[in-house]
Length: 169
Image (cartoon, rainbow, N blue to C red; front, side):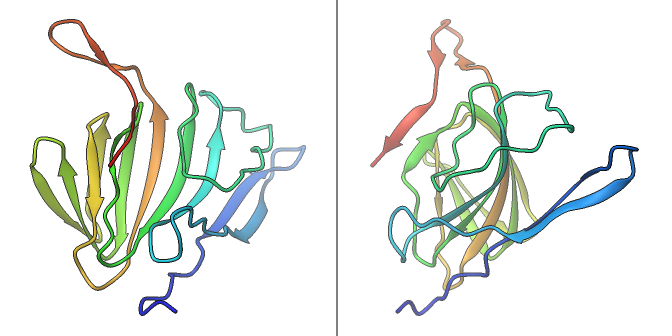
């Protein structure tokens, strides 16, 4: 049993419209967290995803499967990540523009060049395709939320493109 129990599953409220345009609540549910690396590692919850933008507010969103949140090539994903005390993600890069908000706890954002920034609840990050890792160096779980938007590959000065990097150990 963990010394640090999981945070509650995120609650997701979804709105929509009736046929005459009146706003309504379509759903109010807990989104189960997924722990692909075991109970002592990070947990993920994909709250909403669409395969392309702009989206239609007429169509219902797709049913989401458990998995590490990955952005559709032309779409968008809204998710949470809980990083356990002492945990660190592998170095990785996504082919997306990521908006991140730290909701609770504290996390260190580490770039592949060695630079680090400590972020606390209420801090925000705009991640623009940088190769990075997340580290929780505290005794409390850190919950972050992300909106990941499809992005073009980063083009370097010499014209080479940097795409999505597989997770590097």
